[in-house]
Image (cartoon, rainbow, N blue to C red; front, side, top):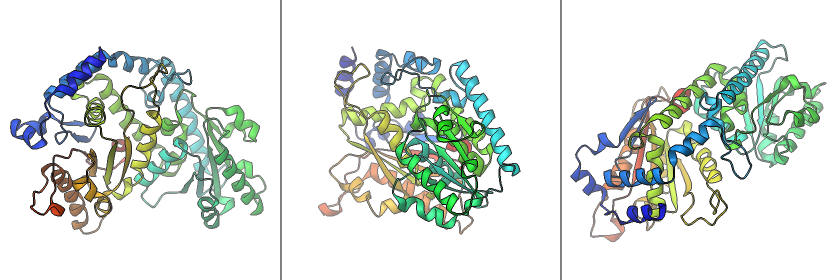
Length: 440
């Protein structure tokens, strides 16, 4: 049944973006959707009512509604590990027992933050957060995006086993004022534990009498952390049904909640919960995550695109492409179905990207003129994050808009070296302001 629907999708007429706009002067309104302080413009993709309806039929054929319900109810949908995938429960959506458990563990995290802030554990002013993959990418991206520069704690997130990553942090930090946070789902991650051992040795060399007394563990296996020597009062567990790449929403977010304030972390969760609710309730043609998936599948399966590029027109979001790479390419990085059969369709596109105008002077010629068709996602923030001359931010946002328009329209020239073919797709995502809720 699904192969027949794919045949239908592939047989639909291919219209240029210019033609789609000519035929529908309301296209921006139809394919522009707003939710939780974010605006998504899908109008410069090749989706139209015919494609959306065909993908809706495909979604029904593959039982998307039932799959969403299975996700939310805590069924065992992580087949390879034989467990549920309950990161949404950390944000208040899903199985009631799991939501309650997440809330209780979050309360424990908040209490520990209050103890540390009070100075009872020591006069800490610096935090070293050690993790790798999801245990580091999420916290580092979040901290880079939201830090203001006047925080109570100086936070350094280190993931690489390369000593060149860790040593400069040790050189500028004061061992007696440093809180070490070890983030590992299994608490057996070799890179993280080697880095942790090096930090503890540095503390001891610097005269810290009880180095382990300055350690907090974030893990789904508290017993492993206890065996490693960490007191159970300073272990913040999270559920094993929360995948590492989604663990930012659990106690893995502790270091950022400590550095930026617990209210910031709560706002992050609230923003994510608002989008979760939208994903759960909105009809397919008004559902932002589902429409994004439709566009992704169209370009991957129908147009045979190998990659998708993400460009954040805001320096604070420079790590967003890296974060998205792990979320998508690790989640969809296999060539078999959930049943273990060879995948007949293409797997996830390769996600890559960069930052704003820097990327325009590095890779955009290929996007505009190269032989590859590469869907692009632009992300911009309306409110500036700086207090300099408004020309800085105005130029930044205008560049973002201009690139999407130029990719679509192209520029004809008799000189083949200066010819831009156009009809190249993009999605524009606008945040009113870059703060915890909108980022969540």
